[in-house]
Structure formats: structure tokens, C-alpha cells
Amino acid sequence: MDTILLWVLCLCLSWGVVNILFYGGRKRGNHTPEWSLPPGPRTLPIIGNLIQLGSLPHRSLTELSKVHGPIMSLKLGRVTTVVISSAHLAREVLQVKDVSFSDRIIPDTITPFDHFKFGLAWMPVGPLWRNQRRICNAHLFGPKPLDSNQQLRRKKIQELVAHVGKCGETRSPVNIGAAAFQTVLSHLSNTILSMDLTGSRSESEEFKEKVWQIMVEAGKPNVVDYFPVLRPLDPQGARRRMMVYAKWLMDLFTGIVDRRLQARRAAGGSESKNDVLDALLNICEDEKEGLDLNQIKHIFLDLFVAGADTTSSTLEWAMAELLHNPDKLLKAQAELHEEIGRVRPIEESDMTRLPYLHAIVKETLRLHPAVPLLLPRRAGVTAVVGGYTVPEGSQVLVNVWAIGRDPATWTRPEEFVPERFMGVQMDYNGQSFELLPFGSGRRICPGMPLATRMLHLMLASLINCFDWELEGGAAPASLEMADVFGLTLKKAPPLRAVPSPRNSS
Image (cartoon, rainbow, N blue to C red; front, side):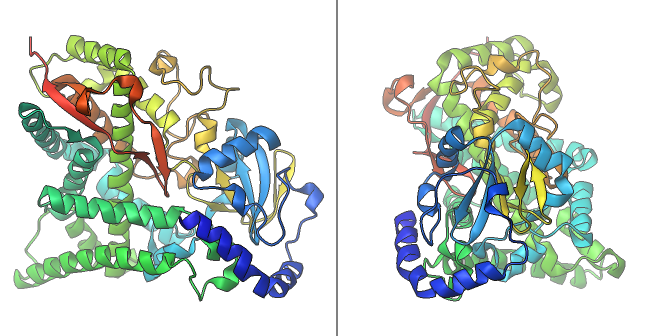
């Protein structure tokens, strides 16, 4: 296992560079007295607290916070890391002092193709970041482009329902996460590129596997991030693997962009599909806009990787929780039957009449945030948080997984109870710091409006059109609810369930 390899490499290789490491530590100009740091667990020589991360860091850090408090410091190799595990401290970091913590710690696996310089999620806040954010809002995530694509979303949901219906006819189990991934990927690729990247279910599975491997490599502990002198060696091979996966996607996008440019030239500039790619190419032609073809490919990399994976994963968790708690599923189906009926397709305009469905999504995001530690932030200056010093250059992790299960905020925090959100003014838009699946502040996930529209539509359609049982007739209580950690949180094993059409009366 890679985590075990990490510890062995740390122990064996770090001794050979210990003098360099210690010398480099003494030379740091931003050294902060240890007494002013947040409390934290005792450190081991050289490796610090690395061994305490384990294979599920979000869970390990949550357990440590129960001992050391909602703000704690760890030494991960040579990296001082501050972990935030409460809503009020998350507000201090993400809102009150957002400017001080708006930049990223860059994992070594994000360096292939210089993605950390051009990817919206990773680049520093500045003119390029603001320009890309503005472009994405104007052409993808703003109210106008979202409303204009309602018909396409409706079509893709109908295709999902048709696929599930065919499985129901043969009593074949549906891989919920894979089916959702194909739907989201098909919607994104048709919106952005006017083509369907899923092609066939096998091609969709290949794309899904590449995306998941990118999430794994970007999220799991990597020894070179904690001991920078080891970067040239890439001892775990993480950067090399990431290069392979990222190259596969970048080559795909390069081919698509090149073919579109050739078609535009052949048509004398009159060829237009009126999609996002055309809009971006038009922007590229205006030098004042500061967008080029390389940036377009990096935008696509973020959109297709983050957009498809997080939304489909959350849908899978929501379905898993409903199948694990059949009384909640029946309650959701009753609301849909009363408000919508079972005959006509569900429309986006129906969503305002489905408060219990919204509560299910919120409760799913509370228990299973797609990015449990958000993306790592970097302290741009030495700052005081919760009365403790956070040194300049420190890594800051906001454990939204822990915040969503904090017993000081939530009653029965480990249970799936959508009712807790009924009649409560709490949302996931970055203003309710008890519920932060998309983050907050200037770094809040820009794709949230699109993701939540797709999520509500898919979930409502699947539970309104079909009854569900676990594969093999397994009892709801036996459903495995374990997770696998990458940059995002994946259900393990995948959810497989058998649908049967609901009576339309």
C-alpha cells in the first residue's frame, strides 16, 4: 500500500538528507516560536506526524481534533500544517481572513503540464484567475447559460432513466456511480464541445477510471510534498503516474480543439456550433482578453475531472443513504408523488416544491462532502486564528468532513437525518459554515450551481421513476458505507442496486 511505502521511504531516505533538512529549517525567515502554534500531537523525529495520517486522513484528523481541539498543528515532514475542524474557525479562515489564506499549497502531482499555473482550482488569485473565473461564470455557471441548457439537461436525465429502465426489465443491477458519471460527462461534453465523450458505456468507464486515478494521485500523501529535496527522485512514482493520466486527457482535448480550429478555418470563420468551445476560441482571438489555447485545455481538464467526478460521487452517496434508510426513501417518494406525480418527467422548475429532496441532498453533503479536506490552502502571511499563530507558508486544511459531524453543532451527527434541514435556513452556498461541501470565500467551487442542478434532477428522477433494492436482495442494514480517500471521497465498494418501475397511478 502506498501509505506504508510512504512511511518506509520517509524513514529510510530522510536520514540521508537530515542535515540539509535541519539546516533549511533553521534558515527559514518565517520561523514562529513553537509555543505560539496551535496544540497538536507529539512529533516523531524527521517524519513528524506523517504516520498518523493513515489511509483515511479525513477520519484520522477528525480523531486527532477530538484530543487536540478544533485548531491543531501537525508537522508533516518539513511542512507545518494547521487543521481547522469547527464552523466558527472555518469562518475565520475562509471569510474573515480569506485574503490571507486564498492561495494554494501545490502538490507535486499537480505540476505536470504546469497545471498549477493554469488550472482555475490551483492558480494563485490574480488577474489570470479572475479572468478565468469570469469566463466560466459567463459561459457555464451563470444563471443565463444554466437556464439556456435546461433542455439538454432534461434530455440527459431522460437517457439515464431509459438506461435504468432497461436494467429494470431484465432485473440487472445498476452501478449507480458509473451511470451518474456517464450522464454528467455526457451533459458536460455536449454543453462544452457539442459532442458526446461517453460514446459507449465502456468508453465512459475508461474516462471515469482516468478521472478517479487523477483524484487519487492528487489527494493521497506523497513523500515529496513533505520532503521537497526528494522531488527529483519522485520515489513513489506519483508524478509519473499523474503525467500518464493527465497526458491522456490533454491529448484528447488537444485533438478536439485542433479539429474545431480546422473546421473554422475551412469555413472561413463562419463555422460555429455556439457552444462553450466556440465561445472560448472567439475570446482567444481578442488579445485583450488574455486567453490562449493552452489555457482552454487546462480549463477543460478542471471542468471534466472535477465536474463529473464530484457530482456523480455525491449522487451515489445519496442513493446509498436512501437504500440504507428505506424509511427516508419512502418519504422522498411520497413527496414526489404528491407534488409531481409519476407520469411526466421532472423539471427544474419543480425543485422549489420539493423541500424534503433538498434536505436529502444537504444531509448527503454534510455526511459525505466530495472533497473532505477541501483543497489545501497556503498562509500568505503570518496570521492569528483562534488565538494561535499560523506561520506564513503553512499548509491550512479545513476538515469539512469533521465539521459536518461535529457533535457541538449536530444532534446524532453520524446518522442520516434529512429532517434536521426542514424549516431551517441553512444552505451550502458558503455562508453557513456548518455546511461547507463547496468551500467558501473567493475560492468557493465555481461549478456549484451546475452541480446542484444536475444532482437534484438525477436523484429526483431515479427515486420517482423506480423502486430500488440492493443487489442480491441484501438487507438495507447490510449495505457497506465505507469510503476511499483521494482528492475526493469515493464510496467503497460501488453501489449496485436493482430498479423496478414504479406504478404510474
